Length: 84
Image 1 (cartoon, rainbow, N blue to C red):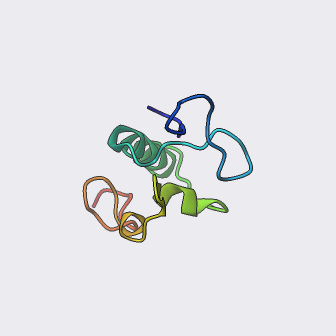
Image 2 (cartoon, rainbow, N blue to C red; image 1 turned 30 degrees about the vertical axis):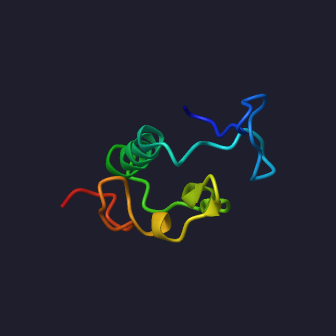
Image 3 (spheres, rainbow, N blue to C red; image 1 turned 90 degrees about the vertical axis):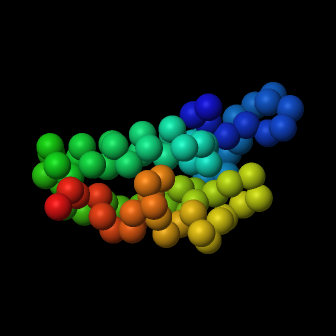
């Protein structure tokens, strides 16, 4: 569930060059990513993130998915990590 696998599930996919690409297509994985970011913002008071490989967050089985890049699993704007 957590890592992207090819159809034959023989190995982990590596679309980033860093190894073991996270399966952001799975709703639970995306929710986990958002919860981790919220933790760093709300509890650790981090006020910015650097996403060198951010396009991997919007990848699905067909590559980069433009629709997936603009919202969280709940449909909120990608800029609304903090609760208001």
